[in-house]
Image (cartoon, rainbow, N blue to C red; front, side, top):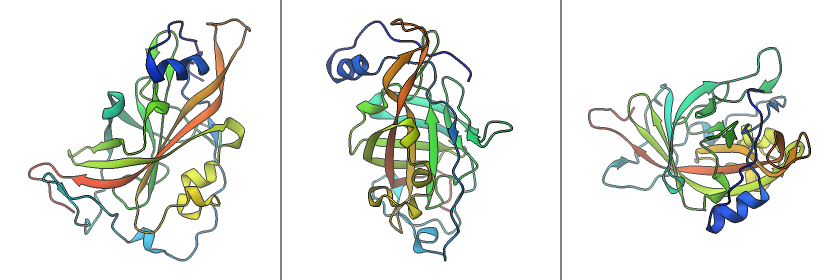
Length: 244
């Protein structure tokens, strides 16, 4: 891994204080996660062709894109958390069947899977913090609430706006990567993406912190992973950009 975890000495007020007291800071958002085998592809479903439902606004279009925009996500915003971070494309750790981790201040988009705007699901990770004093983009991910918005900005300026509906903490070895990567085939009904919806999944470290040297404030690792899922509700097109 590219860093060493570190506890944060000071506690913050309110809900953030409660969470930070239970989940000391670490330098890595996530250790590399093993990649499960992709299940057999079933017959095509409506999920691959249906446009996601969206909420109309004065600045957003809800019409389906005749041809999904085959661009690159460049920025993630989470207004409720004050997050605006660059997105970098990442994939597998070289020589291993494990998901890589992004640079400390970036959100990592796994470009080996689907991209936003295609009516399916896309997967992102980011650091919670990074030694010695960097707060990662997903530092306060557990403070996010149902109904909060997550915005993915593409390289042509269009925005895909998602609304949070799911949050859960897993023990690392029990994190259902198969369901999170391919939710339209999820075994867990709560993680199964309906036809006609587009999702994004975010994950980072959290929960119990274990110090390598047994001392508070030293390097170590998190025992848990925090997961947030949101569904597409708006597609915002900048002036001059066509909808497909």
